[in-house]
Length: 163
Image (tube, rainbow, N blue to C red):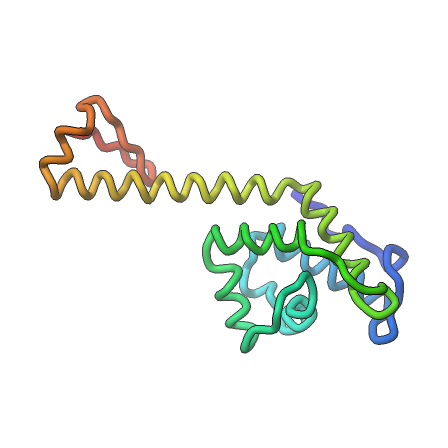
């Protein structure tokens, strides 16, 4: 499991509008949110308000809109992780959170979360495709001619043999 406190105030430059401690708290909260698998209860208003102004994200209509855009399916979670890892960091840390964005990007890349979510997405896609094949094969007998009798389809811990 990922460590809960990656950053301390000493890691960041205080800005005109935020202390180094506030920057560290944001960074640690964001990483804890990702490490926990994006639970809605950890997506606080304070996290949303800061996050919607970092990593090239734009403010959505509200916290719920942001959550629905990035955290309700694996593909969107992967897109979010990629943004954290790869978004350009603009601005002077004395005026922006660019130092926090840079540090979070480094941690996200080192944790291997992008590869993990790419694997999850591939597995999810394969499961969906196999379920569709099973459904189509049972509905359309012509498909059975093109699926080898020995084909085994595993979906959700069930095994179906194609007839």
